[in-house]
Length: 132
Image (cartoon, rainbow, N blue to C red):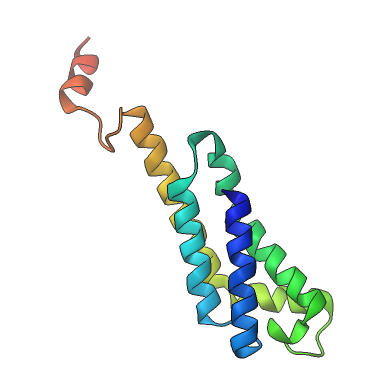
């Protein structure tokens, strides 16, 4: 799943750069969708990998673009570190939204796995444990 997320992210970055020469709202929305789909489609044994995917994917994307085309994530004359920091700052909203959705979905899936597929536990079962 992580490999598919990275491949889709590369495709989206390429399309966005071809259309506008910079990362735009199109990339931000696509990043959030990639995070959402990855959290919904991953197997439980891969929860950790998908849980750390959003910040690593965003950092890797911005760093590669800062190396190859600094003007796409920052001012064209910025150095590598400044371009990475600027790129991450400009994409912070998408990163926070994607990460929050990912962690929220993974938490709900973990809870549902513990409760036999339900988000909430059986109230009668909880009361019998509390009384004994």
